[in-house]
Length: 297
Image (cartoon, rainbow, N blue to C red; front, side):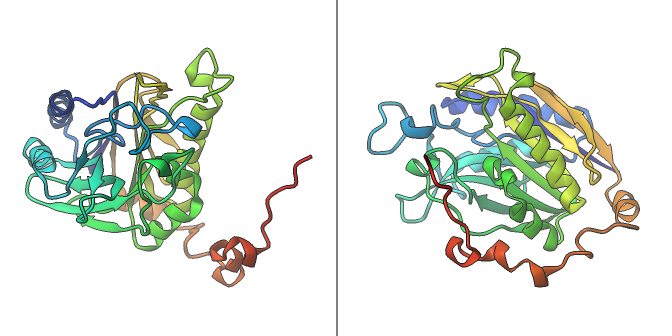
């Protein structure tokens, strides 16, 4: 059996606060027998303070940007010390080797090994003003099985999860800083349309690919953003096994990965039943696929 956990929590620019919160969450996870702990996007240094036309940029922001950290730097090393034998997925702003380029990134690690890292591919609402985009997806062999990483808006693109499933991912960890809608926000954030989309994507991507889906998220507020929490564990049938709803906390579920795969994939197996010969438009450019921007009156 494997115990999966997804965190909903508020992380800020204060790295000392981040490390203290991570230490507390790791201790809770260890007490609950967790094998894989998913922390949110931007758990080291916080996310952007706003998005859209008012997004933070290196050139124009009057606010502080997330600290840019190296994958082999002391901050990730400290997370490894805190993790010990626990496998942890964590989001951070990665500084590339050129010393200038910044990526919205995630790492998968424990006390002895960084098993892999990922740079966010799909960027929403002006995020490209602050980060460069990644260009690939990876799946990594870990003590709990083959694990893929993606970040936030990636979950809106079925292709992202499918690529990882085809690489043998058994568990996909989706780290987010997913806010409520910026306009016409629901009074009860659990009923907000962006909360609905967040939850629908999580269940759909798990079911699309018949994988375990571990979705973490920020909670509370940061800058102009109000996060929707709803960290969760979803099984390969799209069923939510545990969720935090809007609250900060930890969604935990014990699963039998191999037995579940045998059961879920014994009949309808989506990866086997694909028809790549008719999917050419999926990977084509907009022009090749015939896609056009809708006309506006």
